[in-house]
Amino acid sequence: MSTDRIIQFELARLNAHLPGQRITLKDALSSSNPQVVAKDGSKHKFERMELEYISKIVHADDWDKLRLPILIGVNPKLGRGAAEISGEVEVKVISQVLGKTCRDQEIVIYRPEIAVVRAKLPTTTQYFFMVG
Amino acid sequence: MAKTIGVAPTRMELLKLKQRVSLAQKGHDLLREKMDALVIEFFGIVKRIREVRAGTMQQLSSAYRALSICFAMQGTIETYQAAREVTKVAEVDISTRHVMGILVPVVEAKPIERHALARGYGIHTTSSTLDDASREFERALGDLIKLAELEEGAREIALELEKTKRRVNALEYVILPNLKSMVKFISMRLDEMERENFSRLKRIKAMLEGRE
Amino acid sequence: MSFKIVTIADAETAAGFALAGVREVYIHEKKEATLVKLDELLASEGIGIIFITYSIAEELGFDFKRRMRAKKALPIVLRIPDKTGWVPKVDELQEIIRRTVGAEIIVKGGS
Image 1 (cartoon, rainbow over the protein chains, first blue to last red):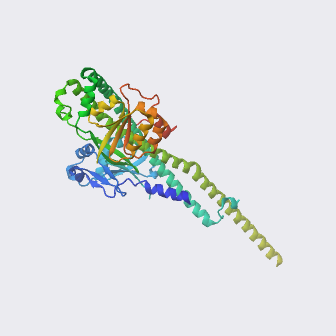
Image 2 (cartoon, rainbow over the protein chains, first blue to last red):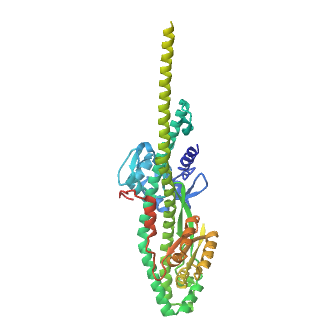
Image 3 (tube, rainbow over the protein chains, first blue to last red):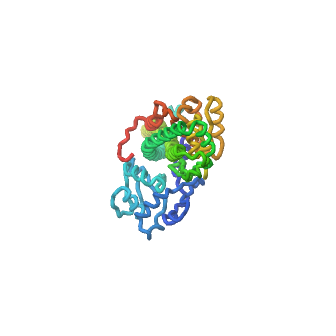
């Protein structure tokens, strides 16, 4: 059925903007042109101001543990308007942006908070739609 | 009725249909999340545009005023001549960033020399009104470059948002209701056929027993 | 990647931007000629931004709007006020907002 094919196509396209390989905060900070490349070859540039902001939140020892971009995980099962952030360092960064303190491995954030995060870190965060 | 639907009322078809409903539902829910996310992005950029626009328009006004003064003080021909003699070239670096399936431009002005000599118009026409006008337009240019980046970003996000919204609506108001009513129809037909079968078997059994 | 900036305007506006280093200008006179130039600029590589005044865009009318809908991402076309400061009554941004979001109610919470 052609509508099925369109749906499959749109679902495949949802995450097309994500890079094949993410890079660590450490590598991004030391690069003169910090960017990642998506699967279709298109480039995504990280804003230096965002990298510096993150480097002040994350302990230098963890700079090679944080992979960029930080993924905002969208899973409809969480309910409309909710998304999850995974990873201890990632959670720390996002919590800091939101003015919260959080030591969890995973947190759920909601639409107004997502807006704040995206406004503060537009190039170092990306949406990730959980299709599977 | 089965003829108008075009699908045979079998358990196999019912199963396939239910899978299609599942896919359409998943597609709808995820695309709706994408739509919501695009709305966040769009309003984020609109907010920044509003912040930048006011200051930019003011700066541009200042620039036009300074230019008027320059025309008055320096003379029209002299001002145009100076404009022609400028040697520096304003250029921009354009890279890209991803916003959910679309590429949005990142525009940065390449640094420009501030020194009057570097501006290029001859020393013999050094005048502060010319310098003022140049400076004001340089500032305006910086603001406008930023505005160009933001407005183009907003335009592309709006286009993607429109496209996504259409898909979500098609799924929600046409495709899913269609599929669900087909599922309902075939379920009902299958139940009906089973009941007919059941009562036929009962009659046959009664007939057989009656003969004995 | 490095890109050029071009101005399509009246002579005064163009002169102002030339002082800032925007050396490539096209002075608008007739609608048809300007449209030809616009198409040429839209098709050429190496141009990052085209500044065009609101007045000229308004004069080009639907022909301008159509090109804006059809064009690729680059060059970016930005409409700017000329020295008269004239801007169209309809705020296009508001129109886009109304069209894309429709009747959805947006809850203020950082958006």
